[in-house]
Length: 380
Ligand SMILES: [Zn+2]
Image: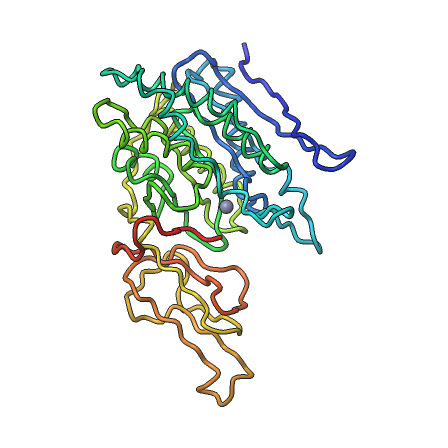
């Protein structure tokens, strides 16, 4: 018998006569101890995740008919119905709330302090009991949260669907990029099999990026509670990661099908699906700290010529790109080379070729931390 159910949730309306709806797919048994939650398109202009969801649902429907889904798997294939409607001048925006300019993947609530208050007298010596106690408290805390606007309601609903999962995968993409993964430093190396199975060419680690994206809102609860209560065993019980599925235009059935296969294999390895487990591929490159990412920024207005593409290795002192301003004077005055200051991998770069002062043109993953603890490690 099929376990696949489809539910919808209507966000409270923000303008008369208009409502938005989240569609939630569930597979497996909600009473099983293992839960995975996956969503795509929180940044609604990032198309590859939607295609991976299409292929993933095909695979899960087939596995479901074979009674092979042994955990609970929740999918929200289109996670941002607000952003997906942000067409402007024939271009889908989808990254920032038009209402206040806030990125849809920033400023999720940090619940650790409220949860700590609720569990401080209940925690004990058994890790499994502590996980249950913390999840129950997190559910109570999330249920009391209120939202001031439509995007707040969306964030609250997504968090309420994901907070109690063992695995949370938030599918995104960059502008032009190799496949890369963001996840908590406390999850490494325990959860390196996720990055290895996905073939992540770069894995970036931070427990606190400074801006609380969705994945961090799910995983950081555990890191913070473990630090607050060192006398009790509190494992990092939620493997939450942001998976960047290459660049905006990297859509093909072959790639998306392979990504969906890799997710199924990963979930099989983690006991949520019964089936074959091929040998874990080698991780292409060891993880590096998120604080080691160098943002290559434009020094001036102009057009951009890249000398490095996504996936290229770069050494400190090498020119990554030039900004050309044809109005700046003589030939040698019109060219502004931008050099890397760190050794690493160029893992993403901008998709258009315009520069303005301070605009991020490329990102380099290096080993050496470049920013102090507490700094904002992500882009706006
Ligand atoms: Zn994104």
